[in-house]
Amino acid sequence: MTTPAEIETMIARIALRDRRAFAALYDATSAKLFGVCLRVLKNRGEAEDTLQEVFLRIWAKADSYAVTGHSPMTWLITIARNLSIDRLRARQARMSGQGYGGDLLEQVPDSNPGPEATTIARSEQARMNACMEELPQDRAEAVRGAYLEGDNYQTLAERHGVPLNTMRTWLRRSLQKLKECLTR
Amino acid sequence: MSDPMSGTDTPQAEPPFDDEFLAAEYVLHLLDAEARRSFEARLAAEPALREEVHRWEAHFASLAEEVPETAPPARVKAALMAQIDAAPEGPEGVRRILSAWRMGLGALAAALVMVAALVLVPILSRPDFSPAYHVDLASADGDLFVAAGLDAEQNLLLIRRDQGAPRPGRALELWLIADGAEAPVSLGVLPEENEIFVTLPAELAQQFAGATLAISDEPEGGSPTGAPTGEVLAAAAVETL
Image (cartoon, rainbow over all chains, first blue to last red):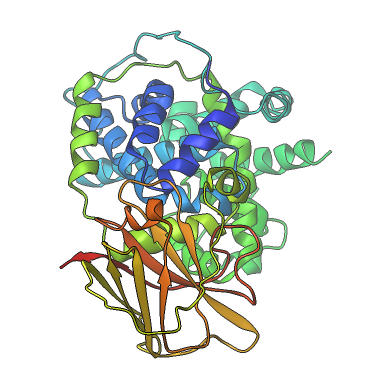
């Protein structure tokens, strides 16, 4: 099992251009980050390309890790998710009005259990989960959809069968409730 | 109820939905392209807003816990390692390495420092000097120019400061980053003399081939941590003559 402290050390060494640390970080975290890319993109080829971008970004930006104050997995997941969504948005722009088609996976890929290498700090996670539980189920799903699937307001509104403005209101109220709960 | 954020209203016009939630929408990528651009412009100038973004990033990243791990195909790693190896490591890269040392990585940095800082003691009489290595260190603004040469037979280092001086109450510290090294090693604080010869320990002199030298701005007496703490003013690769 790779601990957060070990991952942090790898990131610090990567900032010093240590290729072995880079390979070790890849081995420890790529399955999790690939999972994140796949969840957003639902397309293996695009997820592979994006994963590559993610690690190049890590190589280039390891020295800015400390500035964010994030736990190491939060930082890595944020990079993977942001680059995945950038790619998703670019694809949506290309296909605007046409919906998704072609080679997209319909289902979430098989889970690959592996070691519990890559967890967010437990307390942070427990708190967020508890606060998500306090939201009505459909609202919580909308928040998850926005974060994990990269759904925009339009997609969320369609998925939940509500008008666009209703979805905006849902989501903003949910964010306010989450914030209240998280700062309690 | 009507949507408080419809149309082109600016966020400032809706107090109930303030910056912290705008930051959440930004993190979720729910802002439209224009709102996103203007938010990013604010981010660059507003540290408090960046903190808000970081807070939401941390909250939401917890949601990724449920995402199953999926091993990517081996070709991704192979392609990555090849790209990393091909990436040139110019002065910018070195600046990045050294700036990494200044930020938050102090504990690790200190643990990695193997060799304590030297005190540069000038050699008084001018010796025979036949350099095998040379490096010119110039700051981006041109205010500082230092040349250094190493006579590998005698482990003798010549440091010539042609231009520039420490800032008032500060010092200029010279660093060696050996080829493939994980840590910069201090070669000491530049003395007042414009030109000095110093004898290096053999184990440091042997690391000059393929190394990079750098100069950082440090407190008087040099970095208190054994790693660069101030601005990296100049860095350059050592040339083999």
